[in-house]
Image (tube, rainbow, N blue to C red):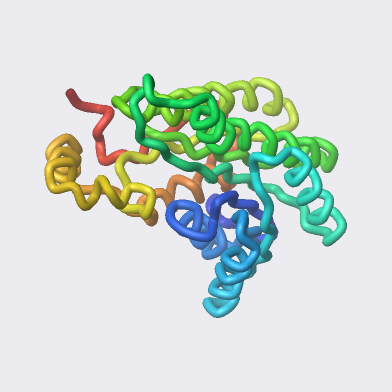
Length: 255
């Protein structure tokens, strides 16, 4: 009997996968057997990530495009079609952060964060799902949410709005695509040791607060997400749909 967690023969597109959470998830999916399509806006960085996978003996392709640009997303999927690459698993990971009080935000600030963290998941998810539906063999969509899919914190309003929206976009995807055997779920990371959180990690008071506030007593690592990502990408989660799994060391579970 094949393993419930075996991704052999599957192809996974992971957006924003040249570093951080996306790179760790992509590597985990590849190690579980999937061919991974790496993505970033910078062609050089995307190709460098692919070369790193090749050196490790992991199958991967590079597809550089801006996930917030509708025409670029459509063109990227057309190139994948031409290359005979059929995406079975999509991980919408691309995201940015902006820390600024609401009263100081410009509309451009707001749009940039929401477009990158929320609208991109709609654009890339739509193109992937159109093809999954046409092929008729199902698929997986995994959106990367946040603790702020559930709760708010001062100075990150556009990020919070986007990640909250992503939770319900995930449920909307499940509502429409489950009939096609497509499972759409999300992962909500806690505070993670990533480049994007560099300023927070270096802030001694904030570092102490995270460790005190998290029952596990530590920051998460990108590798902490891999098991959940593989589970949601695999046959093991065939009847799991529209859910968000928080990988946060227990932070949301306690007061």
